[in-house]
Length: 187
Image (cartoon, rainbow, N blue to C red; front, side):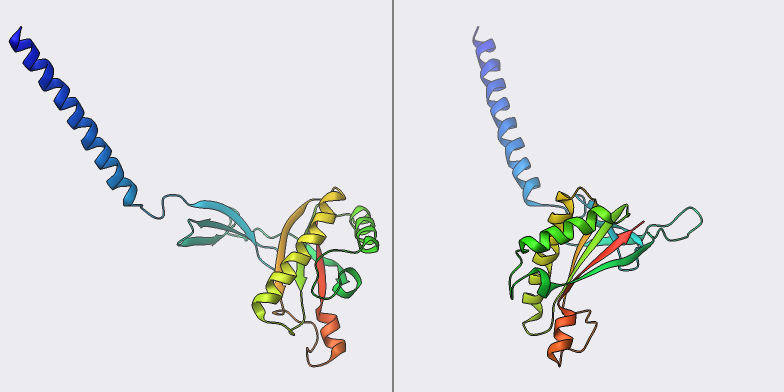
């Protein structure tokens, strides 16, 4: 029985050693994270309505136009079907829509014949670019919420801040024109 006890103890020690080695190896593999293996696929629609396939892992990304078998870009036909002055919907530096604004937007979304919408928020240039991007995003998100509550599909919500002005920001009238939310109808 002495030989069997020795063999059994040796096997137990070997088993414990194997578990320890696998734990250390697993920890070492976890520390050596390989980037590029966990890409998140999405589709980005550019301002012209053309689709692009995007793969992103948070560190680096890859994008290519979505094309048909003939190499023709896949683009949605869209046009700006509504431009709402931010001054009519929002108080200064706010993103909550007034009750009258909610009613007006709900009526607009229910009456417009489109398969989906792209909502684009814009601001004037009075604040920093970072602030304006955030404000235009919050406002576009607020309009998109009203649209979803009205039962329509939102394809994208975009924030441009002060980057795409339609008028000069040197005058009060120009700044007022630049504070807007554009609604693009996709058919």
